[in-house]
Length: 97
Image (cartoon, rainbow, N blue to C red; front, top):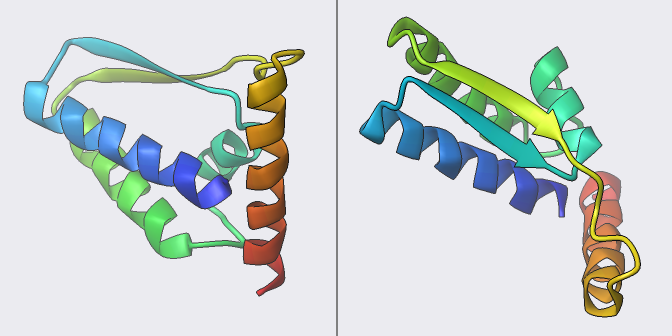
């Protein structure tokens, strides 16, 4: 799950680089992914995080304001809870291996 979250952030930032809006808010329900961006450190797929940080650097040089915002997960929605459990298992496997 963490890897997928970071890949989605990477794609979002690539879109921002192409479109060049004046400001953008990227919302995420993954506090772990946002924390790894904030601290520039990851236990899983540091290469993706490096791509994100490089993209952010280029965006800042374009004078584009990007804000990351944490939002609550999809709590009490049964199918989303099931997907979350599967993704959490994938995340645990990624961190273990």
